[in-house]
Image (tube, rainbow, N blue to C red):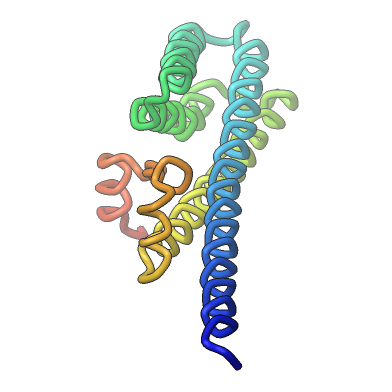
Length: 192
């Protein structure tokens, strides 16, 4: 083989590696974005369930007005942050809605008639189900960010990311538990 053929083979191999790595990173970026959209679907679902629950509850208590106002305000804040590209503010607002959802069962305990209402019970279960689906979607999103970050920081891949910085180098915020939730979980004890 001549030196020219060897050089061409090496250049083709390098070009092939660059293309494969670029495509792999683009696929991981799209996976992160898809997982982010799955979170959006669950957040919208949660908001609709809250609206339904509030409508069922209206005849039983005054609490729902404050709750609905808080949820709507937080939802608007989250939507505005999303529109502005401010993921940290959006995450904080959505986490506050999750806190409201976790406290809603305590309110039901105060209203036995409401607790016995079949529609209300179904909606409570929907909230729990939605929160579980939302937690799974957040975990999947965080996992996809972790995979993307690990890939883009690897030895040869980081050089390709540096060359195509505008197309391949993104910093996605993780969905995390609030500090209060972490403290609550650390202090949790089983009572016998």
